[in-house]
Image 1 (cartoon, protein in one colour):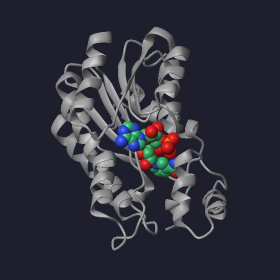
Image 2: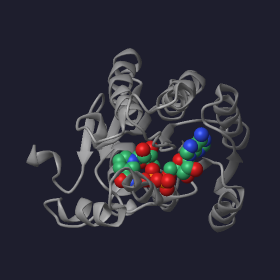
Image 3: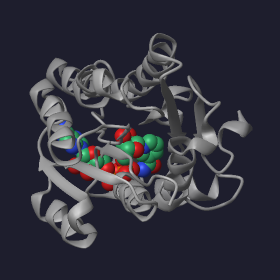
Length: 250
Ligand SMILES: NC(=O)c1ccc[n+]([C@@H]2O[C@H](COP(=O)([O-])OP(=O)(O)OC[C@H]3O[C@@H](n4cnc5c(N)ncnc54)[C@H](O)[C@@H]3O)[C@@H](O)[C@H]2O)c1
């Protein structure tokens, strides 16, 4: 129970990696404020987790919603010790195809949302003895994919934002990124739509890793949990790839 008596906000909590992270943090004793858009899935999670978890539906690109997540954590648990940000969208289309609105929306949902949540949360995180932020970026921060300009730019922005925030808010708040490779969630199937044969693209994404399989959401949750725990007390301003070895292949 390494997260006992700690309160975390988890975004993107109703599916995929965010859900696996929420369940892992809850198993380790954390109090949770869960963010997502699917109210039924959110209710299912809070029913499962009991009094230690609350769900607030909303759009992470709205600064007021991020403030409301922080307010809920303080109202229900009286403190805030960490953030795990996972909400994300693809915004597919090459630069010449991508409407300006889609570019802006992708940057808002993937990058600005984390700035908004940090802005709302940092005053209270600084009051926690061991505050921690784990931001879900992507190997797309370092490696390009066809038709993903907004996605790649936003995910690279998250790595820069995490490092910069770690500088301003250390030693009180540790801030790190996780950068997953292909993980078996609804997201990767949507991402594969950018390729001529989407089913083959998903299959190849797994085969092309050194471990020869897609990641599971729980693989990512284990890294997020380690970084959130005091076992990682000397780790800040870092970006960890967790990708079955894709980046090792150049
Ligand atoms: N699956 C992959 O292969 C992969 C690889 C690298 C990084 N990622 C990143 O991991 C994160 C989690 O994705 P996942 O793979 O678990 O997929 P997912 O589709 O299960 O999760 C994404 C979540 O973000 C939420 N979301 C999207 N826009 C939102 C908005 N405006 N407001 C609130 N919530 C919003 C969705 O509702 C969903 O719950 C994303 O940031 C994604 O970019 C995914």
